[in-house]
Image (cartoon, rainbow, N blue to C red):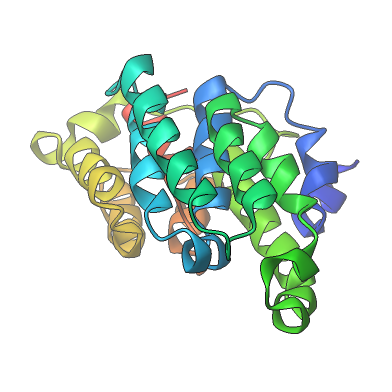
Length: 218
């Protein structure tokens, strides 16, 4: 795959083959975002709790015992409801624990097995396109070196930039990313990739490469 193909690709499975340097944390956060997408929540509403624990585990804020407990509780709920597609969502939740496999599993879910075959089947291509956009948000551009962060940006105006970045991350307030771009420009940032990513419309999630750079996360 070339850089031009990466930027336009709508096949996340193929894109994942280019992310060998992706950290376990980013793999887990990407998997969580895939599992937590709208059609999963229709069938397993409480899975959001499990995903939140998995996200905290990725950031070192939950331990393996807590992750295992919420995983067991969610699997019990899925198994106890005959109308739910057990194999699909049991596999999806188990893959949160395994990290990157969740993305692969969700890409291969037979849409007709979800109970709304016509609607979800027609939306399969859209789902893949969404995941491709999401992967670019998390990974950035693997064909380029990550842009350096100037320490002066982080200290500018009494540290407002790292504080704003942390608030966006903690609160999932990704609509504030354009504000972060303005602050970065005022602090002297001229990196086009960083500024454009903060200002571009579309999906952003925990693991966003710009926020991770500013917060020193891998």
